[in-house]
Image 1 (cartoon, each protein chain N blue to C red):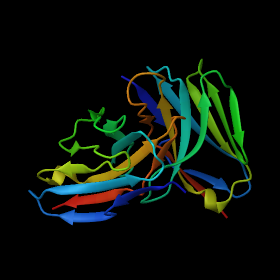
Image 2 (cartoon, rainbow over the protein chains, first blue to last red):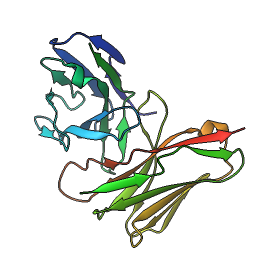
Image 3 (tube, helix red, strand yellow):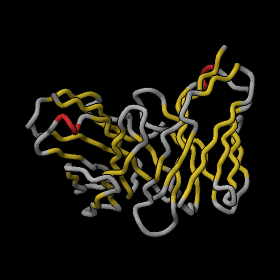
Image 4 (tube, chains in turn brown, red):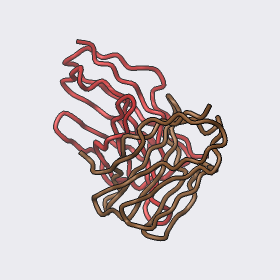
Length: 111
Length: 114
């Protein structure tokens, strides 16, 4: 069982609200990732980090932002949620073997 | 552009039989390939990794093959059980540079019938 946690598991929120999706891992991994996944579709990388104070955008353009102030914590923020942001957001971390460990995900619905 | 293809339709297999899932890719030269299992509403769970210079990897009832000439990987589950029912994702990775972020296929939904 991977030690990576995402909160909340489910979030229903109105348009225009600011939200932060939390992700924490206790494995001491330097690399962390955020993926977006729609039902029946593939995961798309939206952000990643090599370590503290390192953040990069992924392959899929996203209006969200991330920060990495501590090794174990990699939160994702949407300043103004829109219905197009409705999706599942998955956080992952990786050690030295390129294997990624995923959290359970946050299912976001923006009304 | 890079493309990963997995069986788009659900695969129904009788319990006890071997399930074989296919992953084909184009416009990509991966250094390694991984298979993950994803259950509904959950994040993917790592199963196996195979490198470009390896032909086959085994782990308990699981076997993965990797043919870089055909640009294909096959994932086998022997003596399949209903508990093996899930979506199985193929993911490609490159060595060096980037974030080592994986490129995932859409997955194949496997159903093991009792």
